[in-house]
Amino acid sequence: MLLALLLPRLSLSVALAAHPQPQGVPVAVGPPPFGEPRIGLPSAIAEASGVRSGMRLSAALTLCPGLALVPPDPVGVQLRAARLIRDIAALGLPVEEIGSGRALIDAEPGLRLYGGPQRLLHRLHEVAPDEALQIGAAPSRFAALMAARLARRRPRILGRDDVQETIAPLPVALLHEDGGTPAEICEALNLVGIDRLGGLASLKRLAVRDRFGPDGVRAWQMARGEDGGVIAPREPPPLLRAELVPGEPIATDHALEQAVELLLKRLLSDPARGAAEPRLLRLQARLITGESWLCEAPLREPCGDQQRLLLALLPKARRLPAPAERIAISFAELAPGAQQLALLDPAGREREQRLAGAAAQVRSALGTAALLRVVTLDPTSRLPERRYGLAAR
Image 1 (cartoon, helix red, strand yellow):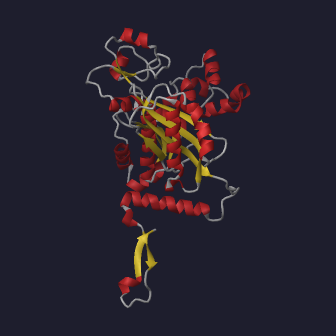
Image 2 (cartoon, one colour):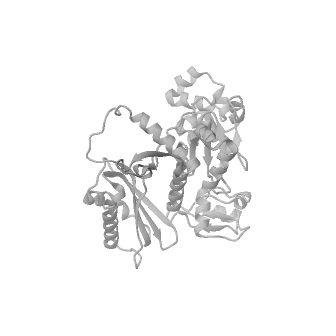
Image 3 (cartoon, helix red, strand yellow):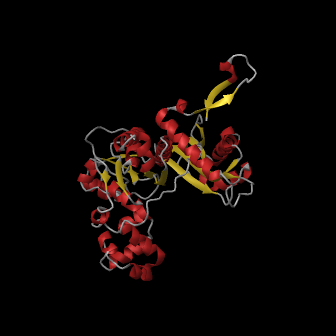
């Protein structure tokens, strides 16, 4: 059984945390700075007036004249989503992040670890205290996401016999949004009148394969709830982030270059980095207009040279749309640098990883003192209590 966690209003809640609004006022996330005038996610009150995400600002204000706009905060959304994944992993649960504010969790270890579904859900609500948290459970990945979309105040749990009947009325466009199916396949299905998942599930597998290929077969399996219940959990990498708050806003290219160079020097000298080198750089800035702004600079290979990192990041950093009050750089993807990677894991590596995961789950449920080992301290001592001691495993 898989659990799917959705925070559909994550961008709005993060923006409201930085710019609170009075109760009962229709609110929406404003357009990005110097971008196309289209609003972001609206509140429930604004939706009741007809306001929708992606709508032009003029149309939204016509439908809802009292609409209040809050500046978008993509940096805050990114940091909060990363913190959520780390908090879930700290509970000893295998978790796979599939997007900002969306995650899949293998529920079987959690049910045994915490003694039932109610306690497991209680722990999840503790790490994600958001009123808009939606939880769904199903045997397959896509069905779990659909169950989370249908959930409201209580989790939606689908058994194997309920999957097809429950997700059949949903639109095929969700295959692209949640399943990664190419948009061209969804558009082609709509053109021939197959606009619901039930219509796709009723087709023959060979007919779908001949028309759409492997991507179509995968979409057909998702529509039938047969896309498998296996996730790819990964341990969240250490958060390497350096922040600078200058005395005056950064408004010139020279000041921006000096700030970026200083932050890169701090990150490269951080002891937590070890011998790892980044493959992706993220520049985050808080503008004087109230919005946040970010850009990414992917690298072809891991690199720890400051000058090369500076050359990769500066061209994109110069697109800063307004002077910045605060600027930060983070190393998003760390990889072994200048090392030959092993083609196969050494013998016993998988067993060690499983033991380490099991130990982390026990400590999460029972505390750090629940799993200790006996170590030799002073075997020649005349006092027995000094010969051996307990240490964390």
